[in-house]
Image 1: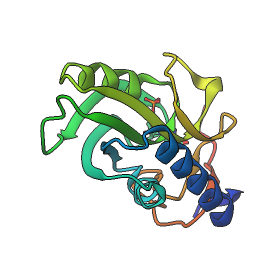
Image 2 (image 1 turned 30 degrees about the vertical axis):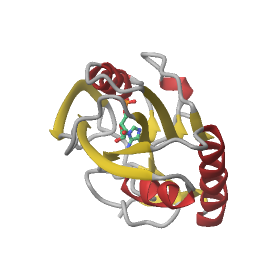
Image 3 (image 1 turned 180 degrees about the vertical axis):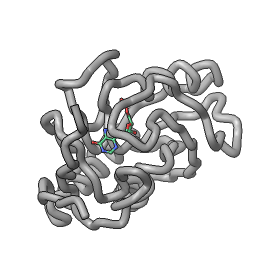
Length: 177
Ligand code: IMP
């Protein structure tokens, strides 16, 4: 069983998510917003951030797959579940767990912009700037982290550990040379 080394505890995450909710509520005061929660990794962050936002919101889900069962991005992004409604003329806030290479969000933004929304912004819990391949503007960022593979709080390794209530670094066995 791989070891998980704690990186961000549940209280630290909760405090930052509440702050992000306050920032969003202030920036969009008087507006209606569609929160686009990216599945699967953002289901925990999305549920917490949505409850920290004091605005009239609707919530939709977009299932994307950019990773196989390993820790490296394939660079190929596939929509596994599409939004349930058109978003033309709406303010969208995409809620993502982590921006790693940026390939997934780059694809996602290009895709969403073709649907004629009024605006699109990004709220990401985590950012790994050391691994950037495509720069992505993160409008609301939780934490910047080093080039480590993290699990918990919705994030997985091979579909596991999403239910771990904190964020931790997964120690993977060395790959054979
Ligand atoms: P990107 O396209 O390389 O930016 O990858 C974004 C997606 O890769 C995220 O939405 C996650 O699903 C996954 N990912 C990237 N880094 C990690 C990590 O450290 N732990 C778990 N999933 C990750």
